[in-house]
Length: 17
Image 1 (cartoon, helix red, strand yellow):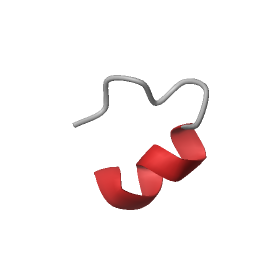
Image 2 (cartoon, rainbow, N blue to C red; image 1 turned 180 degrees about the vertical axis):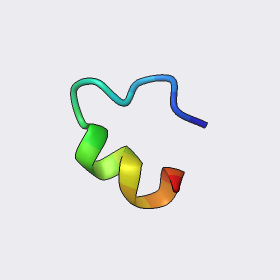
Image 3 (tube, rainbow, N blue to C red; image 1 turned 120 degrees about the vertical axis):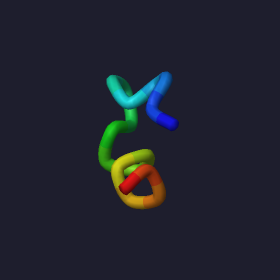
């Protein structure tokens, strides 16, 4: 689930992995 991992890819990458 990585639809908006551009602006806050740091935050999304945390739970996206």
